[in-house]
Length: 231
Image (cartoon, rainbow, N blue to C red; front, side):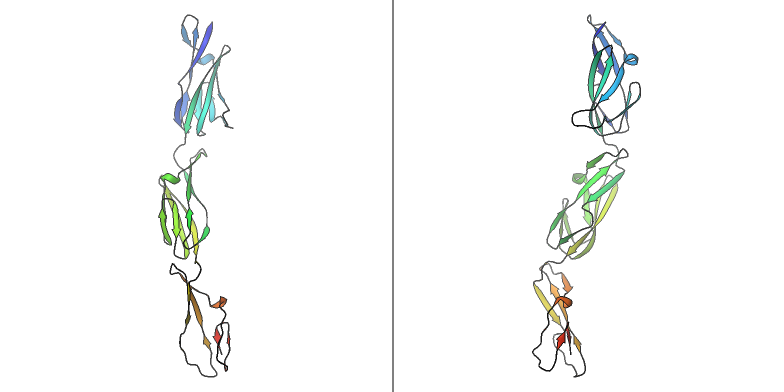
């Protein structure tokens, strides 16, 4: 009668979508051993914080691994048990995503981007450290951190394993450090008007029209100025 059971292969490492063919060997007290694979029951044990068994036995002793992680495989024969582990690594990347999506920052601020890859079995992993990040303008990347300088909306992209994920970034102007009025000098007939425009500039040289947000005044007792229009 057997007193010991062993399972092989031990501690296999496979790619998601691959199979492992397990075998069980019984040993008696005299050291005699024989193959009991076809008479054994093979199962996966859920444990160690995992809520999945990592795959399934799609034949009596053939295991198909699909979910990345490390799992316990158990053989049962004549009341004896033997266990080993199988480590499943993710398969080839099929989809790529980037976060944050469609965000906004102020000129001078930095935002960090992260890439998540997924395979056909819905295994996901952080691919940020292996991704190449780029932007079509607005600032520059240092690793996965983008420093925004130029106001506007730009496309951020991440490239990994031959795939590209994109998002948009809106960079808003910083606080203005100067404003300029135009025209600077003008002559107007008594029945005519002049429309003034105010342009603000921040420390990154971003310029924008702030006419509508500006309070106008005049020391001319014969004219008035309303919403930037002098009459």
